[in-house]
Length: 433
Image 1 (tube, helix red, strand yellow):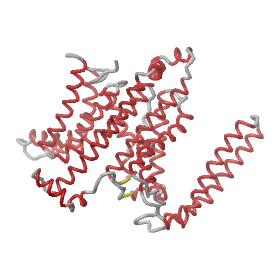
Image 2 (tube, helix red, strand yellow):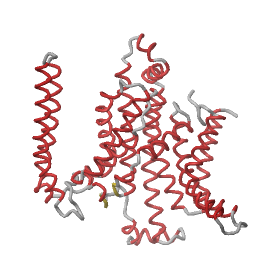
Image 3 (cartoon, one colour):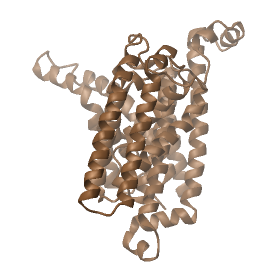
């Protein structure tokens, strides 16, 4: 069997599993798995750029995904005029002051000679700037969060088209990655992993606690859509007539239409990013990145700026994850900072990359689709299997324990799949060439 036929067969198997879900369960469930699988594939491409191309061990993926979700709120939600009037100007002024303080500190470090005088001036600058920053920020934040906190209590966004938020999410994540990379990319791989995980936790903690920015754990709901609302489709006589032609009731037809519309949008984004990643992989730049990944010392001896190239790929991979985060928040229609769990879902994305094939973009896409399907379907399948296995058992502690264990089938299956792939195909289902 040729490599191309084998790879097509693997994608066909995943497609067949999704179709089987539609036949055996519901097409709504199948399309939901497809849409989240497409988003997961985009996240896997972002991680594959960092790890597969450059060997950067980033386990702070969820932080960049959360920044993509924040971008949707900042771009597409309508502004809150009362909040802006109460404290918007003060918050902007405090943020500008904070940025100027940091910039002044950096310039001071560069311009003044090292010594006690520089240290004293730097401490005075940072401490004074911090207290002045908080003196302006705190009352402004309190005023904003007191504006109808049950409904708003935040500044809102720019009321721009939500599709514009997707590239903005990538830019926001890229900007954060640049700041992180300038400080953390000099660390050894294991320390880099710890640093990125900690920074992701900080980002999510900010989203959870800064109500003026994203309503914190109260969540932002009612995010605009790039596709029609179901209720609007159900009240459209032409759509109802077309649904009747397919023997579908308006409610089912409208939900399927919306999910298919999202699937089309997500597929277009995935194909564009996949094409760009392939072009990058096969370019001289891509070959240089793989040379740096395989032997940093040799690449540096040949005149390559390893730190700069690591920063480039770190920013690019994080930007892709930010785009995926913006897409996920758009589809959900709400921003829920409490749902971003860095360690749990970062592990899932890494399993997608490893199982699909690290260093191969098509492998990342396959891994994203396959692992997300298993993540969703394994638990109900486990419940069914345990019901069958325990059907002949009498009620008791053992039967109750086995039935309760169905909740752990997801993590058990992820570990089992990872072990089997590493044993029989250690380079992934679609290995790097």
